[in-house]
Length: 135
Image 1 (cartoon, one colour):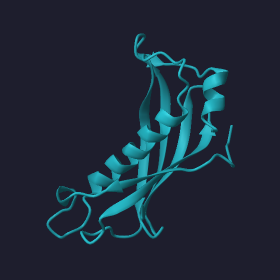
Image 2 (tube, rainbow, N blue to C red):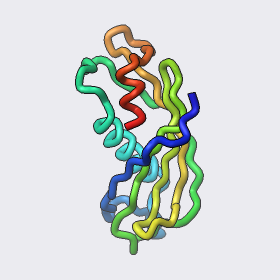
Image 3 (cartoon, helix red, strand yellow):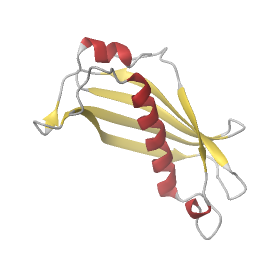
């Protein structure tokens, strides 16, 4: 099911000296860490309390386009996550890493799969969980 009106989750992330390369650019791997921070924080806000610890999620796919430089003069960024599709056992999200003024520095698309840590395989979402994703 495609989702067109899900709320956007955002979190402000401070940047550290070690996040930058020798040219003063934010290291490309750090963009992925920032996206992960946003996904994880978003998931913690929507994950139903009744889910067991073993009912988890794994990242199945991520693609990222770099739009604008984040350099060492930037002290922080805004990392956003917004769900775009809910399947039987997967969700797709659009993510952005933005300068604090709102300029998009990177755009990512990811797919997360429901994971059963006991059975070591994917799991199907329940109705309560599916509804929670749209909060």
